[in-house]
Image (cartoon, rainbow, N blue to C red; front, side):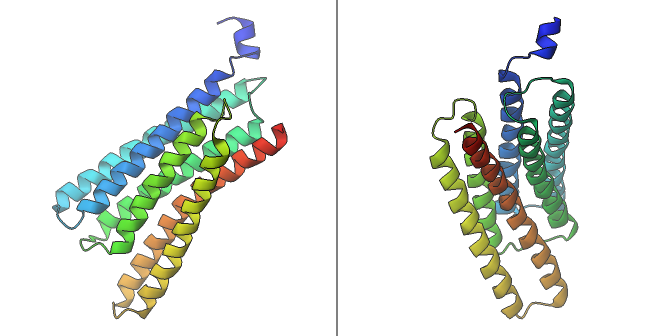
Length: 212
C-alpha cells in the first residue's frame, strides 16, 4: 500500500465497512425473530443454541465496529464527517448488542410462552433492519434516501406505540410481580433496538442537510 492509499484512501471503503456491519445487524435481527417465533416450541438446549448463535453475531458486530473506528483514527480524509461515520457505526453496534442482551435474558429467564406483542416487536425489528440496510447501501449514491428515512421513522412510531400499549397491558394484567419486571425490561430493550436504528436515520438526515 502506497502513501496515497493511506492518506487519500478510496471513499468506497467506509461505505463497504458500514454495509458489512448493517448486514450483521440484519442477520442478527432475522435470527432473533426466528428465536422468538419458535420459543414456545423448542427445548431448553435449542433455546441456548439460539442465544449462542446470536452472541456469535454480536461478537462479529463488535469486531467490525472496532475495525471501523480504528480505520477512522488512521484515515486522514473520510467520505463523510468522521463524527457521522462514528455515530452510525456506534448505533448499529448498539442495536446488535441490545438484541443479544435480550436474547440472553429470554434464555436465562426460561421464558417459553411468548406474548404476541414480543412476536410483533421481533417483526418490527426485522423490518427496521431491512430499511437500515437500504439506507447504508444507498448512502454513497444518495438514491432513495428520503423514502427510506420516512419508512424508518414510521417503523419507529409503530414500535413506540407497541411499547406503550404492551407496558400498559402488562400493568393491567394479573401476572405476578416478577413477570412484570421481566417483561417490562424486555419491552424496554426491544423498543431501544428500534430507537437506535431510528437514530441512524436522524444522523443520515443531518448528513443530507449538511451536503445540501
